Image 1 (cartoon, rainbow, N blue to C red):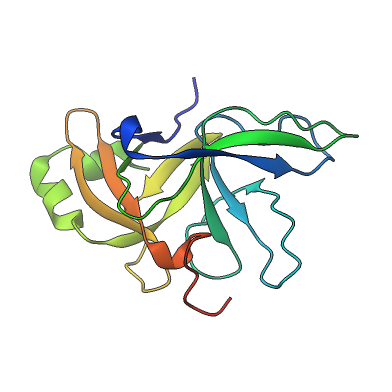
Image 2: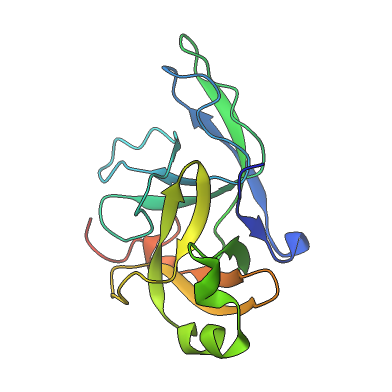
Length: 167
C-alpha cells in the first residue's frame, strides 16, 4: 500500500468538495496533497494533484489533502473531497528517508525546518533533507521515531486561504 498523508486529528478540520477536470481517470488518490494553480481571477475551483517537490508558495496554492479518490474520467469532470488546509492543522507523513527520523534527537533537529513534499515510486513523503527555505511551506513540528513519521503544518502563505505572497 502506498504511503499517504493523514491528519493527526481528523476532528480539527473541515472538508469540502472540489471539482477535478476531465482528462484522466481518478487522478487524485486518497491522501494526496492537492493544489490549485490559477494565479489570476479565472479561478475555476478545480484541483489537481501535487507533484514531486511541490509544497512551495510559487505557482501553486495548497488545496488540502484528498479525503477520497476523485471521480474524474477521461471525458467528464469529477469531484474530490478534501480536508481543507485550515491554518494550524497538524498532518502526519513518513520521512523520505526513514533513517533521517528514527531517533528523537533527529526529529528535534528538524523542528521548524521548512521543506517540501516528495513523491518517489508512488509514495508521498516529507523530504527532510530539502534545504530550509522561505518559499517552502511544509513546516516540521515533530514526529514519531518508532515509525519515522513526521508531524507537519502547512504554512498559510501557500494555501488557498492566504497566498499573501506573489505567485
